[in-house]
Length: 300
Image 1 (cartoon, rainbow, N blue to C red):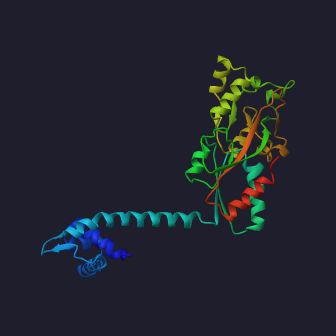
Image 2: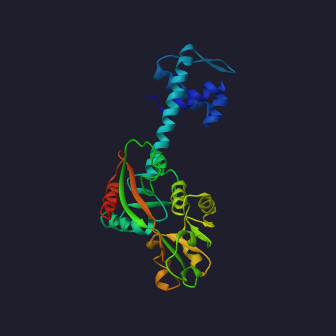
Image 3: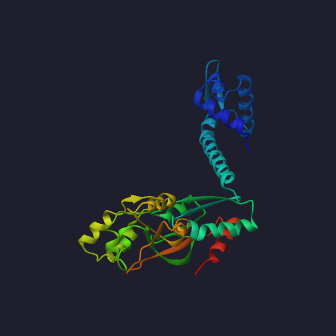
């Protein structure tokens, strides 16, 4: 393998055409550059430059070696990039992508279970209502995804585990007018200001059908939500006043319910949310296997 300094010196001199310019580009002395060029020529076994007082040009062998050296430099750069990513991600860091409705229901207990056996494992949890999560999984943005997998493209080497169906709950301040009277329809709920995470295409289609599937239903759903956020601390904070209705699963409201400040809306219609977990078959790790097993233990 050609020494890296010799490779860098060859490419610098081929580009600059002078020892002084190449040495300046590398940040070394002319004598050091000359030594590196000699190493390159010894490695190849033939002179690579025609030297003159003011310039240096490639010999025929140097011209043939140039694309080889450029390819090698690209390979070394890719190697350094991948190694840096491995150091950052490594077996000691688990990157989890998840929808906002899963953090309390599944992410928290799974992390607790994994840390009991792998206390040094680090977790990076990326919470968002992802529209195309399997694409991001394939691209390596995270090691595992947990959430709504209604959008399922052709995904080679991806394992999907259906976790559970959860009922969606609508919650409002205890003094909200929605609590007056009997069980409410979705149309009655959405007549008030509504707050929720991002509603992707599938959810909008589901709500439109539940509202009757007509033009009025489409218009109602297209205006939802009035406040959109994937942060449930923000959404549940809206329940301090009798204005907004917030949608989520029961665990999303675990902190506010005991205060008596808000309560679920009694519903005449029920809609559920499908939760799945996904991971790539290859590139597994001890931490990923442990987290996957912890999720499997919570399947219904």
